[in-house]
Image 1 (cartoon, rainbow, N blue to C red):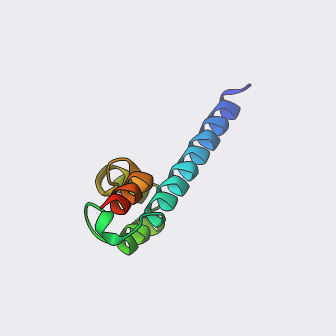
Image 2 (image 1 turned 135 degrees about the vertical axis):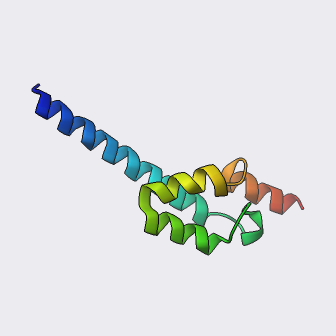
Length: 81
């Protein structure tokens, strides 16, 4: 494989990884049981950040906005309360 082909393959893998991260963050934000489960902001704001800022928005959500354990743990906490 030539250097150019290796570069294209790497960029392709990076793009697929970014898309997977974006989808994961978007699904996690949408599956939140209520706005109270989010650490900061509201569910709608986080969905807009993820959609409009793409990969960077997904990273920001996963680092700052995602509650510990994600949507499943937040749902279990709200059901137990």
